[in-house]
Structure formats: structure tokens, C-alpha cells
Amino acid sequence: MFGRVMAVAFVVLLSSAPAWAAQRENLQIFKDVQQQVLRYPHFTIFDSVSSQIDNGVLTLTGKVTMPYKRTDIERRLRNVEGIQTIRNNIEVLPVSQFDNELRYDIARAIYRHPSLQMYALGVNPPIHVIVEHGRVTLEGVVNSNLDRVLARSIASSFPAFEIKNELKTDAEVTAELEKL
Image (cartoon, rainbow, N blue to C red):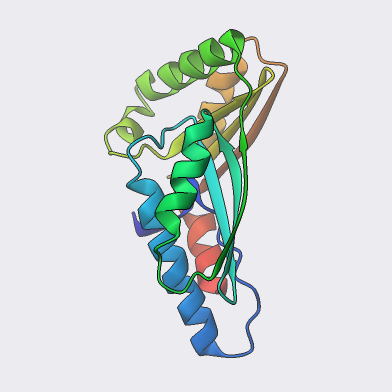
């Protein structure tokens, strides 16, 4: 479960610091950043935020559905201990009725599927549906490759121009974390 929560909204890219202590400090900052984003009340399954921390410089990337989310998230992170500078490269998704309908329809279909309903139970469901100009990206963490394939199959049944499946399994996330 820890691996799933860590990877739902973030991809940790810790720089290769020369000392173990620096890596540990970066990991703690990352966890604090993750906690702040996941506790942000307007962060949804239609948003994606990734972070990279290097010597006190936090770089944020990803996509959010509303402009205020970009600034609110940065504001929340200004008080995280250990962050000296924030580079906010979060993009705001364009306003589009087609994209809105597509993201809601895909998310509803995924989370209502009997084999995937369990993912809808948490406060921050792990499968994120990012839609931009009719192009869909699935992000997050699932239990198995079968769940990843099923989610993509469901998304493919909708009129999207492209489907990218960037879902990871718990095992893949655990392996990535162990490399740190």
C-alpha cells in the first residue's frame, strides 16, 4: 500500500547525491511534498503532479485541470522544510467540453468495472485519467499487470485520439523505490 500511495501522484527522481544522508534528506522532503499534494482538497484523479528534489530545489511537473490548483499547490509547498526554491512547471490543461466528458466517462467506466472497483475505495484513488486535446494518459499504480491492461482496454473503448498507459504495478514501484 505504501508503494501505491507514493507513486499515485509522484515519480520520485532523486539525484545521485554523493552522501547517503543527502539522499535520505531528499527522500524525507519528497514524502513531505507528497503528503501536502495528496492532502490538497482539490487534487483529483484528473490531475497529475510529479516532483524532483535536488539540493533544496524542488521541481514540479504535471498537469492540473484548473489554474488555481497550480498556484495553490506551490503555495502549500513553500512551507515544507528543506525546500529553498520551487520551480513550478505544472501545466494547466485546456478547457474543453470534449475532454471533460471523456475524462469523466473513462474514470466512471474504470472505477465501476467489477475487477477495478476496489481502487475507488480510498480517499485518493490510484488511477488518474489525464485528458488533453482528446489524448488520454492513464497514470498511477495498480496491483497487477492484468489490472493495467484492463484499465487501458476500458479507456480504449472511448473516442480518444490516443491512449497512453503509464500505469505501474506495485512490484514495479517497489523495485524503483529499492533502487533509491
